[in-house]
Amino acid sequence: MEANSDIHGLYNLKPDERVDKLKGAGLTEQDRAALLGGGLTMEAADRMIENVIGFFKLPLGVATNFRVNGLDRLIPMVIEEPSVVAAASNAAGIARAHGGFIAKADPPVMIGQLQIVDTADATESMKMVLEKKQALIKECNALIPTLVDLGGGVRDIEARAIDTGRGRMLILHLLVDCRDAMGANTVNTVVETMTPRFVELTGGRARLRIISNYAVKRIARARGVFDRKLVGDDVIEGILDASDFAANDVYRAVTHNKGIMNGISAVALSLSNDTRAIEAGAHAYASRSGRYAPLTDWRKDGDGNLVGEIELPLAVATVGGAVNVNPISKIALKLLGVRTSVELAEVMAAVGLAQNFAALRALAAEGIQKGHMKLHARDLAVSAGAKPDEVDALARKLVETRVDFDNAKKLLEELRHKGSE
Image (cartoon, rainbow, N blue to C red; front, side):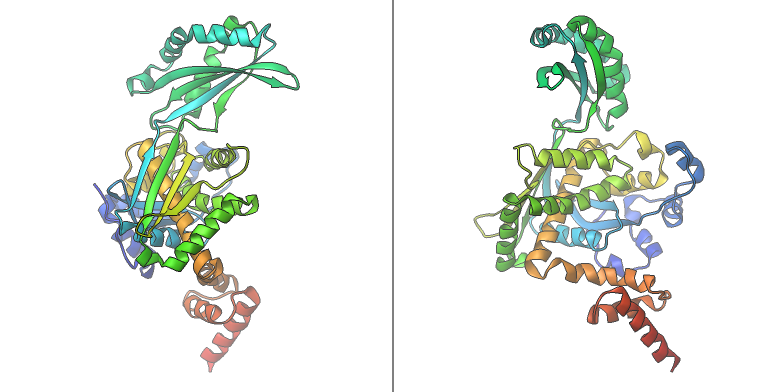
């Protein structure tokens, strides 16, 4: 079932009304109760990590207006930072005017690394492995028949010799198509189980045997067109200047890419995916040329519209790990409506591009703080001690004057004094 993401005014509704609005995504009454009640039980949490003593909750929001590869997508996002969900929704709404986002992701191939030291001749050992590559691939796939039956398995074996301060090392890469899983457990199992065979071939000693989070075989790309009439020519020029700034200044580039990851990591977290692995891989990819650079590129087309493109590695999963344990992640996956890890990577790339556009647009037009502080005002109102029926009025006063904690305390006293009169 394809959900309609072209939803307006969701922020005007109460949380339970928002959930009801999303029933078109196939949510059941049980899903509704889990969303409004928090979902994760102590029993389930105790199976996820060690020494569990409670919960640390973050808000789950949904970004609207997204259309990716011709399909509407409701985007679940877990994040504590104000304005991110609203900004993504707004950016996606502008992109819809030109059909939304076009995205493409590579097959889900992960790299398992085996480090071999103390070979008599690392280059010669490398040749021996590559000569027997097809037989070794067959041996590897015999270890994972279920994955092979699903269409995955070991696709290739690469070898290289590196020079280090501790001598020359042979590094083997097993390229494993993990299908809809992130792949860490499968890859690590194959690499570890095959280690004696590689040691026998090379005559060296095995050291590390583990997956690499630099998933350069799983690149996701997305493209979006933002209409000049909706954005404005001056704002487009400002975005292009900001993009060029990031391309030539590492201080700006880091913040530029952080904004991209605001969206991508928020989606990943809602699905209980490994945000640390995704972020590490993205930032490494940004440095692949030898200097840290933006993950997006912006230009104008022949009609003066703004065109954005993004490219980064995304090792994401729709099955396995906490995805299947956390009931909220199951609901988030249902909301998103993707069937495969490839589709998920494509959607997440589109979200990253939308988030980048929203941040650059705000910076080029009015500065990032205006919109951000409008939403932050509600947090400050609560922190200052405002009751639920006082929050909106105090937030409005803060935006009209000055958004900081001392002012919030002062204005709250004034509101209450005026109310008592």
